[in-house]
Image (tube, rainbow, N blue to C red; front, side, top):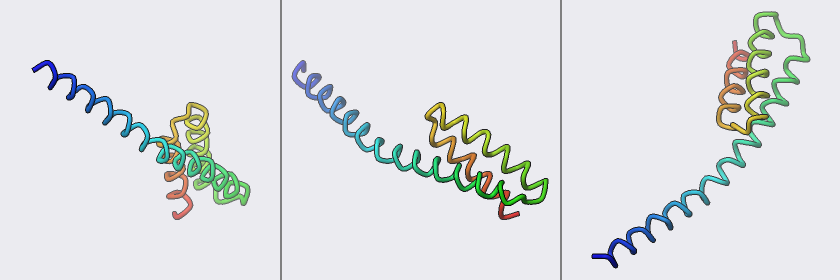
Amino acid sequence: MQTFTRAAAGGAVLAIVLGLGLAAPAAADEAKDCSAGIALLKAEAAKNPPKATLDKINKALKGAERELGEKEYDECVDFVNDGKKALKG
């Protein structure tokens, strides 16, 4: 019984290690998407869109930049997506 417990614990540790390894590429992609999205929103804001659109872009940009600073890339991407929706009208 004790051997089974050690094997199960070893399997659990292996699953956690593999799971963490798979999360790293996704986080790197989200970091790139976040940075690219912020650049896009800044470029669109510089084009002087209508005030209502600019306000939404600036709100999304502020949130995205905050989340980038906190390294919360998935939340940053959410803000970027909000800004892109504002651009579409």
